[in-house]
Amino acid sequence: MGENKKKIVIVGGGIAGLSAGIYGRLAGYEVDIYEKNPVAGGECMGWNRRGCHIDNCIHWLTGTKPGTGLRRVWETVGALEESTEFADCDIFYTSIAGGTQVTLWKDLEKTQAELLKISPEDEIEIKKFVQHVRYALKCEMPVEKPMDAMGIRDYIRMGASMADMPKVMKEYGSMDLKDLAGGFKHPALKALFTDYLPEDYVASSFLVSYATIVSGNGEIPKGGSLAMANRMVKRFRNLGGKLYCSTPVSRILIEKGKAVGIERADKKTVLADYVISAVDTMEMFGTLIGKKYMDGKWKSCYADSEKYPLFSAVQMAFDVEAGAYEGKGTIFFPCIPFEAGGKKVERISVKSYEYEPGFAPAGKMVLQVNVPQFDKEYFYWTGLEGKEYKRAKEEVVKAVEERLLAQFPGLKGHMEFLDCWTPVTYKRYCNAYHGAYMGFITKKGVKSFRVKGTVKGVKNLYIASQWIMAPGGLPVAVAAGKFALWRIARKDKRNI
Image (tube, rainbow, N blue to C red):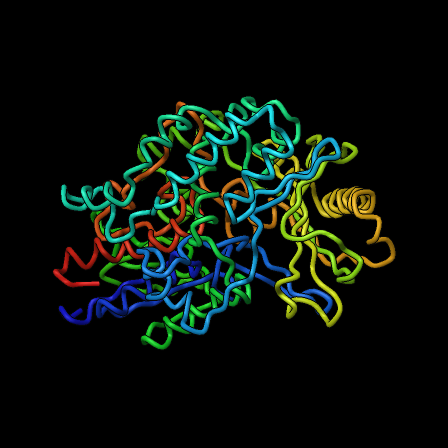
């Protein structure tokens, strides 16, 4: 292949793969993306049921604030365009406990006033929490280049933009959300701080998430996840990239310690100068290249689910008459205990899509319920076959319907079931390890997971995946795609 005609083959057409493909075309490479599913987008996906649209991914998108580095990345890859509208949402989420309802508002002053009104005895902890959210307002994920490639000037610039983050880390970096909740006296506030993320999560991550909402850097792009993925597909194709859907890859070809192309499931080979794996990393190690290339760090993290846990969910969607539901945004509430995946569930969350009228017929809207699941529950679901699996899903759906009606009586006679999906769905559709739709949870006292995105012992092979840095998710995925191309372009003395 000629010097100016170098080719990159990307395995996986999710957000990371599309990002890598777009940056590859911008750097002048010939780029092919191979995606096993009929449509690209990976876990950033949505689908239709009975005249309604179900959104799988975006509850809010980090990197929406104009002028930020991540916003420029989203714009470069076409995920956000000038015409992209954002939902008018003023709520992060609401928790209900012991008959008390409490909300984290986008307006931080409003949040503080509400928390103080509910629990004056928690004034010290409330004001401390709010102040440290303010400290985290300017926290931004570095996206210009990989952190291992950053020099002193890069760190100085990053430090200037995160001048107050050491205060957040000093106060909350050594505690998890269970510890954070334990500092409050009121039961509703205790529930508030353990509802949104697993209680094992390091508390500082939660503060950064909330600060992202407060700062306007975490908005909801209208149209949903599939629409955003499709904008990226359009951008990639407009740049001349080639996307092959319904074309699974069976292995990455490695010769003499160097990636030289891929073998498709139909046994056809495609040669390339560089290969980027943009699939689940366990799928890469376990199927595409073999576990002999998995180094000690990957092995130890995958093997230690106590230090590096994962989470997924059983989720379901309902079509409801808009006037019958009095809630708004995401609401967590207590319920009569039931089992999901063998796990006792006492609290569930429901999210309403009133801001997306196009997701349902006129006069209706979509409600979606999330029931958290972890490794143990994943094995429960994978242990079921055929009719057993279907029956288990039906039982969970029935239990959830009963509890929704108990919490929101107005829904009676005005709600219809649309669909239910489990950790097995993520495994089947995206090869997601243990059905996890994000990366390793960062726990207190455990070093946050991060790797370079290269494979030891294999030249010209790069990883573009949310798994290269905790906690994963869309921001890590899109940055990982850019970083993979940054490494390739630097090698070839090209710019991206």
